[in-house]
Length: 128
View (cartoon, rainbow, N blue to C red):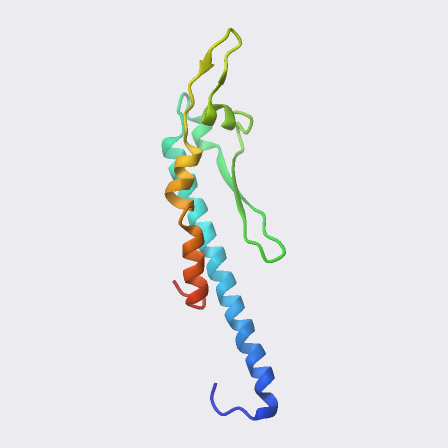
């Protein structure tokens, strides 16, 4: 802000705040997309593979609204199978099928640091 007359100061401050909010919002959305893509890549590598169809079925969906940036990662081809593989399940004849954890490890590896990265984006005004 260079020489700004006092009667235009409020307008200039409002413009600067809008620019800051826009920069931060864009940087956060970019970072969330980046982390979601990393998680999908990790899931494709670590998901149980019998035929490979399950591992290739992971997709992300945007669920933005009211100032919230959200990505949902789900399996488009076998959505009902995800929790059974992640946690294991009971067999019809008794006993249990072992679990193949793949969602939680992918989140722990890529998504757990996202809140700290978002705080850094906010502190830096949209920069990394």
